[in-house]
Length: 300
Image (cartoon, rainbow, N blue to C red):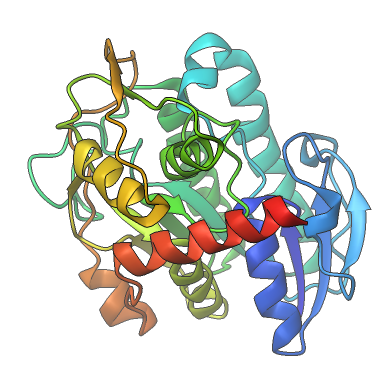
């Protein structure tokens, strides 16, 4: 098929582009390089440097994977206007481009920020109570995706992603706690946990997220959680990262940040049943792969 990947020079997007190219698909990447990196774009993909908020041409595409986003909760707290501009207006532009091309949209939303506080694994029909502008904007984007589907009779798919980690994740973004921990450990720098470290997250490996995106293309629409269903405290994550990195230094602690939920974990049975997908990478294995990539990129 012919695919357009917005944000295709970024963390998740570039890994998705690699998988699409590997199976023989024709891929166009749309990215403004505000956070993505040109060298992460597969040489077999066509690259278009553009801001999704300005619109783009998806003529000939079968599917538009819309991953371009402002993806940092703390940035959204400081700049809700910027967050809404990228995550709402950008999503509308992607839908317009797909509509003009007669293409399906697979939209990368958030599970970690859209449900708010969880009292257990959140299912897709759980109450949506985001606690940050980022979560609010993603929820708005979801409504546009569903609305365009109703208006034009297209089966667009929304994927609510848990806390994604893996190779190419930028340690410069506050949301990438795995990459932040591992990069600082690699450099011998101190690590910091915000809050008491007992807050929990659902960490899902980027390769599993890519597999879910591929499984979603061509499906007749719907909203699916993409996570593991397993809660891990940030303290336990730090311990696992330290074990992979071979360090023993304890983290420093600072006050919890506004907008960060206490508990976040996703139920994934709908994706297992509806997409024929399931997470396959244990956290320890994913952390090892991420560490190996970091070590290799540092040598390069």
